[in-house]
Image 1 (cartoon, rainbow, N blue to C red):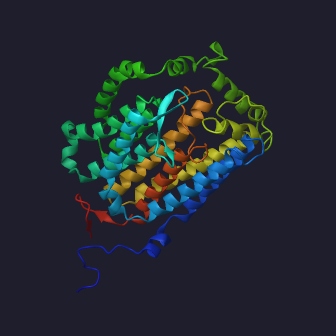
Image 2 (image 1 turned 30 degrees about the vertical axis):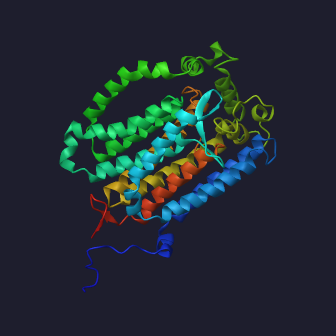
Image 3 (image 1 turned 120 degrees about the vertical axis):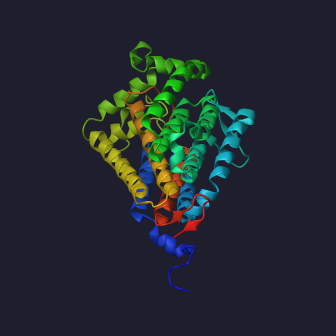
Length: 382
């Protein structure tokens, strides 16, 4: 048999895939999670309890999930895309049927030994399934709008299930990530115009699903002083924290807004405000620069991928990561309504942390398998 002319590309072993993992990206992600533990330690007044110790456990589980996902063969991710999506949707339905209510919303599913938030994991399923669909679709069908109905349903179904929990931020992020993958797959811009028109028509329906407190947040975010002790309180305190940090910050564990309990949800939604107050503009820009480098890594993975599936998955993970960072930082700065979205790799939360790290691992799998060409059926070709 002639060397190198096999019809099937042999899968590299585990050690071979370990060598291919982008370890610089792994290091950067680990550093961001270390910052998370440090900021949660600070937010608790210089104590590992109740947040930093718990977050360290979530990070440990997430890092194992990330490396495991990176070592899984790209073709296997292609094969399980629909299964991952279906599991995510089933869990969302389970939340509606038997979910745990907390803070006025039904978002968690109690599995006995652990409580999970399926809306964080379903984002990954959406990316995988839409990427697989467009990978398997012949390019000439892209011009036919009828072939876009099914992937649109795949995106809108989990987004709708998340919206009724209600979790407006996650629903919008699912939709945004889906749109980015659509565009990267080659969908023409004019078709997005039709879609946006449909979304505009659906806004009144979506508005009816929002709770009263969410409507107040949307109506007051441009003028939070109109309700300083109600829906505007979060934004006002967050702006004070951002401004009081100045250029260099007040120092680690020295932020008055967080230490004196003025800043609400400082361990989750407003962890960026804690960091900005303690490390100032320099610390904030340094964190954003680290996020930008991670984003560039993900886009570079997409650019080097030879298969459509790997390229779209990496772009989808990049879009999800960017949207989460943008929405959280803009929310903390008062540029967007408070929608309850965590800051990736920093905010306290098991489901969010593990899902973010797992998504990073899947993107790394796309890098490990960047030279692998996958046929529309999922088989390797030379």
